[in-house]
Structures are given as structure tokens and as C-alpha cells.
Image (cartoon, rainbow, N blue to C red; front, side):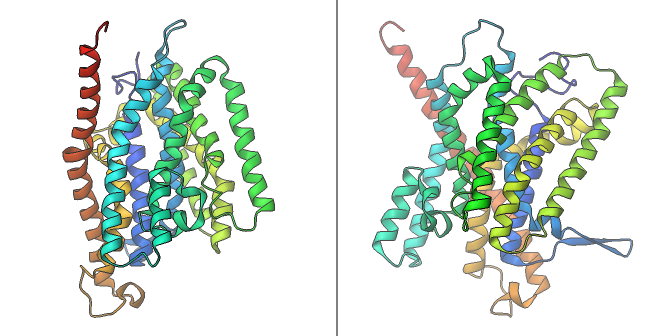
Length: 397
């Protein structure tokens, strides 16, 4: 990549995405842990209390940025292909995605199943079988009980949406290279029509508002942001422009916080779901601007979002996302943080709330590091190397 703000080296990598991904997953994790601790989020500066309640209360919105980054990173290598260059092999794309995600997904299901059986969480054999089969076939989003009331980690729904998008991506990317605006328009039209129908005609959107049609515009906007970034980063931008982009990036981040604060005012579950659908497109557009401005800003901002710490945290972010909520529930259920109160979260045991919150983050981070470097990466390398080795020994290859 030419002159990508002096901070980007590989064609398929934009370092500031590490920081944006880490910030997004941190806020999501804080939201889920807050749901268990009920620790009011905020801090005091010079005698004035700064409330972070709107940010944390609407933390689920940051899933939209995770999905946006996924579309951005998947399409970024395509933006560096010259006219007439062969497109990446779809089978290799599928193999890499499955090698990275499927083992961790199955491990999580297996561990959660053992825990659920050991603690008597399944009251009927029928639900146990249905819960397990839908998760193994990535269809749990299509039923209320296996999506909302699952004992196999509710956070896995995002993996399902990602896997559905991966299935479409090679075809979508081929079409996007030829007709970018048409594909973007179709994605926006489909997603907008789907969400509008839900808001106006469906009283309970529990199993509908997070389906792929409600996110396809976010994925494709991520792809468009990748295309725009490659074109912008190829320019020799003056220092003044980079400074302006850095200031603009801060303004975009403030805009995201204001959008989250607006969403935090939603009351009932249905209002929350409706609000999330309404705010999803603005959130994605702001996310695109955040990536574009930060990735092409001056060196200080790129180092803030794209340093080694952020890169390491981003490398373990998938495992953190998969496990943080389940671990928080287990820590609470098994009373691993002692308290004199039967329900310290509802009783307002502040010492317990702080200790519990810190413990949840710490345990989730340690587990994510161990699983990433002792399971996820070795298993993925083994699967890909075994396949490559077999190809080398086949006649005619």
C-alpha cells in the first residue's frame, strides 16, 4: 500500500482497525458485565462525577462496528487487485474462515453443554437436543428459545451472522468489484425495507432484528470503506490535511458517543430493539468515517489506535467476545466473588461490584489469551498446513 499514513504495511491490514475493534469489544464487554454487576459506570474528576451510563447502557450498539470492520477487512485485499487479476480462490477463503472460527465455536459449545448438564440447566430432553442441533447447524437465530434462552452462550449469535455473510462474500465481492454503487444501493434497500417492515408490522422483533438482512448494509458499507481507504491512502496527503483528518476523527468519535447516548434512553426491550435498528445505519456510517479519518490522519492518532498493545488485544478479541459474557455469568452464579449479601449486585454492595467487574475483565482476558495462542491459532495452522501438505503430495499439483 502506498503512503498509507506511514502506519500501514500490508495490503490487507489497516492498523487503526485494531484499536477500533478493541474499543468496540471493550464497550460490549462492559455492557454485558454491567448487566450482572449493576455497578453504575462513572468516575470523579476534580470533584465532579462523570457518568458513563449512556455509553455502557447502550454498549450492544458497538456490535455494529465489529460487523462493519469485518466487511472492511475482508474486502480490503480485493481493493489492491489490478484490472484483470484473478480473484482469490473462494474455497481457500472458506477454508481459512472455517479453520479460524469453527474449532473455537465448537469448543465453546462443548464446554457450555458440559456446564449446562452438570448444573441441571436443561429441564427437558427436547430442548437440549434442539439447542444443540441448532447451534451445530448455525440456525439458532431462527427460534426464540435457542437464540434468547439458549444454554450454549447467547453471544454466539454474531458468529452465525458472520458465517452467513462469509457464505455470500465471494459472490458479493465479485459483484462489488464490477458494480460498487449498485451493490451498495441494493444492500441499503434490502436492509432498510427489512427493518422498516419489522418496525411497522412486527410487534415482537426478538428473533428478527439481528438477522443477516438487518446487517447486510453494514457489511457492504465496510466493503465500500475499504475501497475508499485504498484510494485515499494512495494519495500523498499534506500534513495539514492529516491534522484535519485527526480532528475530524475525534469529532466522529464524539458523534458515535452521542448516538449511543440517544439510544440509551430506550426503555422497554422492544424500544431497545427498534432503536437499535433505527440507529444501525447512522452507526455504520459514522464507523466508516471513523476508520477513514483515523487511518489517514497524522502519526500520533495512528499510534494511539494502531500500536502493539492494540494489535495484541485485537488478536485475542474474538475469544474475549465469545467468552466474556458466559464467564461473567458463571462467576456470579457460583459466587466466586464473596459478599455478605445474597444478591450483592441488587443490594448495591459497591466493593463487591468493583471487585466483580475487574475480575470478570481479568478472567476473560486471561482465558482469551490462553485460548487464542494455545488453541485457536495452533488449530488453524494445523488445519491449513495439513490441507496444503496434502495438496503438495497429490499427483499433478
